[in-house]
Length: 402
Image 1 (cartoon, one colour):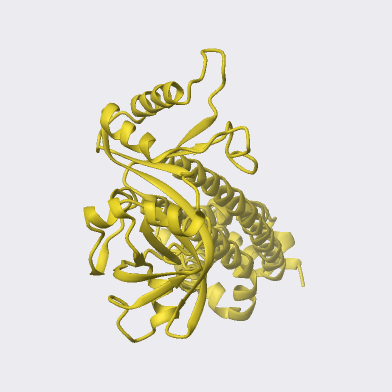
Image 2 (cartoon, rainbow, N blue to C red; image 1 turned 180 degrees about the vertical axis):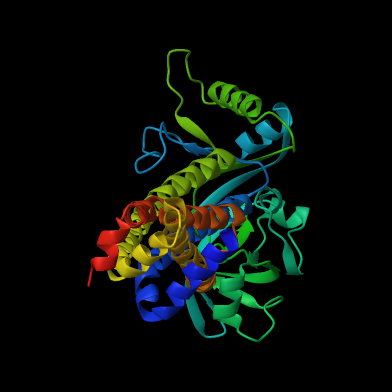
């Protein structure tokens, strides 16, 4: 019975191909929209997680100020000193590496070209905390770090814009009035979590930046990389206690610095992205309901058009449940077919939009299966009323209908 009923439903769909396609169009759009939105959301979440991970290994960022955001490092919050980083590395357990970071921005010149970039002063530990690699050349020697030598490492963007196809290592780079030798090129990281170009930088010894570029001993940030598996809260508490002592804060004073765990930041951003993905998916799912209403309307029209056929089947002995099943299967087949087409469109749209948005394409079998099941459920939900109406027709009245 099931096979015969399915064959009858498919024949009915094939007799009106154009109408059947227009009927399932709403379901196709709904399923494609839901899957595409969720796929792009998952890709954006993964991109954020990768970018946050690219900031450093188990990284803590310590900045002056009582809060994050604009005004966090105001005049009331004294800057750090390079000795603070040394103290954290020596006195706080669970720390892998600590790097002081001073940062400014200026125009750099090389080979007749100029480029505005970020200038960073730090130590070789900065490479460890930030997961940086030197793909060409070398890092700084201890003598260069102590003496504040005129040497620098450059990011891939600076290398491309200033040196092009020529060799950067060994070349001269002018930063304001100072000329420094490029001793290494950093590996590319690409776009950061906040849309910034991580490769647009020039990195030099901290003493070099302070003496020859900024003219002060301010340290903007302390970067602390933790050992794998260590309790981040314990390390943060140790850093907080040490810095309060070094900054001579009384017990009643608030911290004039903040410790940011980039892992927590990544989790927060990922959670926000997932919520937005769910909202977009819910909005897209509304079109599935619209598609279901379209199926119900067309099935009601189909019942009206096939009244005599239904009356004839009932008159020769067909049971009501068989007629009900025929129309219900027809509605489910239409909705499921729309779901399959929508899934295929979603794959193409997901791949294309992921490449356009520069986020990874993440195929989620769960959301695909859920969207298909939901589309089939739409067929059952909105096809039941027309099917019941067809099954309850009076055979005599149906045969008399013109």
